[in-house]
Image (cartoon, rainbow, N blue to C red; front, side, top):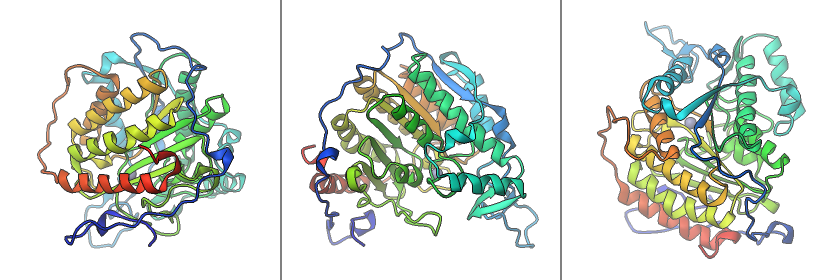
Length: 417
Ligand SMILES: [Zn+2]
């Protein structure tokens, strides 16, 4: 193991090894300030534009023991796959009927064209998905099922996210939220992974680059490592990918990346992938500390012209798929921090993209809180119905301090943060 990970912080004291990084090539070391001068001016009283299409409910990953799709034969009741339509139905309904409703406008999504997918994915991979769809239900990798209806939903998720970023790029508004499923951040250029087929956010980032935004920053707070997005931009200095996640490591042939702090990009992209693996149970105070001590300084140094905020409510205290302890308060705070970063660097422009989040009701509440934060609403309009777990923020803070010292030693453009 080359890098340092949270588990290496033992009782005997602080111990870490940082990755050794060579300075990037001259063409990749340009960290000179770039303004968002080309970006449209802020829109006063901007509502958040929500992009959605109910055709995405057609993806059904089936039932089984949690996400396995298997029936052992001795259980009377099997779980619906955690990435199911109901979780998103609640997200739609809380935004339509919850206190945040007056601050949102609704826009219809659309399916992506196959040609649009090639900006992020290989043609061989897309052909493989088309063939898989044509020949019936398929398990593409662990927990990831392409059933009848899945491909259409995946195309809608990709196209809807492209519509959302275009809304911003065309100057129609500063805040857009792509409420999409199936999720995308594990989908790599040439493979499906972790319930994901197409990398919705990755496609949007590439469209922003192709539309003239020279630098885009991505912050992913889903509880899992956003390995697909990172992989897509691993060798470019134009996209800073930052992922806060629980320490889960590699999980097999579809997900070779470990999400550890030593995966910092390659070639021109050296230093432009920042992983923040947090201890299980990190909670609101720990996440806020990580945002303020790591994410904010890195983005301030990078100076992006667009911010992409990938949200997953599986980092909540009650998610079946995560072991972190965020509550609505924590999500609200993260949303506020993201908005303040956007106000400094991208004229307040933030594209938000939905990823995981599997507790059927609490995911919707946490989504509501996150968007309250991004909208910078003064008084929290919605109370947390169930937050009560304790958290160990001191341990998380030690971990964050260790990651910061690693970054200062090993990430060329962050040496003086
Ligand atoms: Zn996740």
